[in-house]
Length: 275
Image (cartoon, rainbow, N blue to C red; front, side):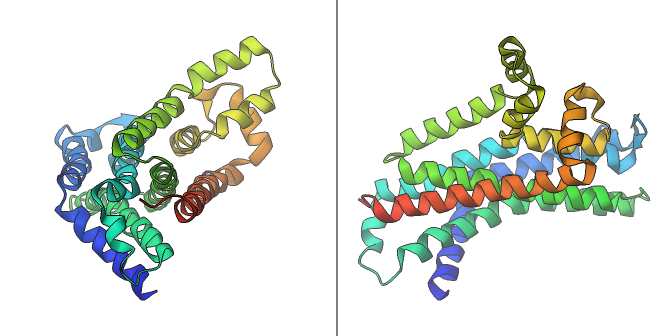
């Protein structure tokens, strides 16, 4: 535990000094500031006004920004240390490999989720001071949704980083994973399913295997509880999970996928060539 916390602290300190973290924090903080500046809290859409409208827009923007930021910065973790000779140096120190790997995992999770959550918290505090009603239930669920999404893509990033033996390959693979998940959202996937004439239940199961699709659908469910925008697929989802069941699934599945990917990355890292 001592070495685990030490590795996490060192990774946090290293990330805070990096330029990517400054840009990352400014992006999410800037999004909230711009949404307030353009008066989004004063607009109304489908009954959502005030801070609810801002949170809905913020969560949709986060879906596009958060995964790629987490993937690109995380894949440099193991692969970058291997290239720069850090791993070779660590082998001479009494630090267990598990403590180093999971310490980096915890530290990287802290620095990737903190700016996202702090930006949302800042929006809630700003709105409260401005006399705007804060939808705490929506705030709590969106915070949990962002937390498990960051965990999911952090785990995928650690897995890619453990497999790749160079930073360039790791970054290319991370971008490819993000692009495939992005492309296989509703439009392309549903078109393939319709042409193949498979069962709607199977199409929905395949679609929900994509963590980005789960994130997007869960975010829409808070904005549109009946999921009207998804058409007939909404009936299949509600028949399979129910309203509350799907909200729980949207939190449990990405978290489980991220932890499983991180554990797989650890096994590959421990048994593979460290140099």
